[in-house]
Length: 142
Image 1 (cartoon, helix red, strand yellow):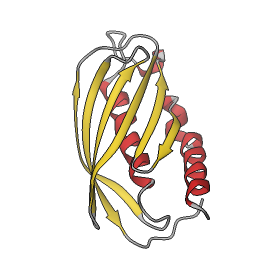
Image 2: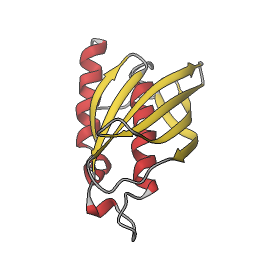
Image 3: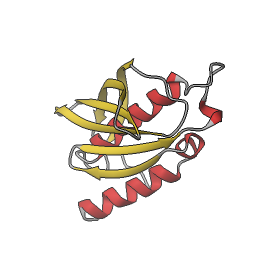
């Protein structure tokens, strides 16, 4: 399968996954070492103060780094988060969130990605960094 077709397949499969659907996440872009995922505001994602829960924002950020890394590894490789850190800067109580991730280092066994989460107006809402493990040669079916 050619790389671009593979990335389109991954993008579609990810956007249809139960967890992504639960949060309303959609992969809007995947290219070499980068991705963008968006998530609309939803009352179901808020905590008692009426703003989006940090866990939902962290899920968006982590997922964006994963999609960026998938664009760099072989289809049979399996990736998993081994460390994740996020800082929150602004509350969200409407609109949509966009996570833009870039892989800043990729070795043979680990990779590190940087992610900015912004609101629809481009204001920085959160910033994260994630480290992933790369396991070679594990067959997955799509």
